[in-house]
Image (cartoon, rainbow, N blue to C red; front, side):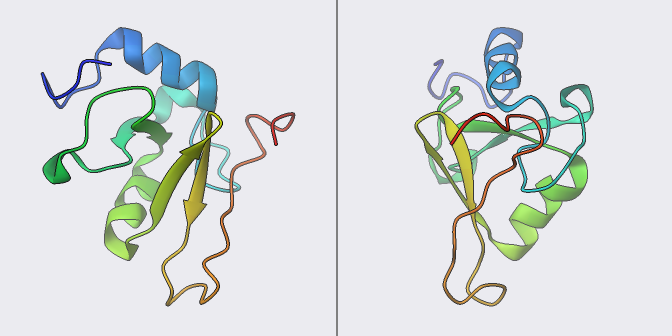
Amino acid sequence: DIGRTTRIFPPHIRKAITARDGGCAFPDCTIPAPWCEAHHTTYWSHGGTTSTHNGTLLCSHHHHLIHKEQWRIDITTGVPWFIPPPHLDPQQTPRRNHHHTPQRT
């Protein structure tokens, strides 16, 4: 965790996030980690820190979708859970990617 020292995820934090997520963490996405961007789950512009607990891997498509559609991401017990906005799912049922880390619950 480097706090708010810099917005860019340094290699050691990126490696930790890659080890956890395995690739794009968005539900059902199969894009591998080298093609992904590190995303602040609490946006940097909203005071988010640069840390493993506040970062997740997203492919470019899902990174833009998260911002455009205003999905929320909660990291619970080391697993990124995606909460869709009400206009896509009125119940806002949390979902996660089982492709890269199927053994986790």
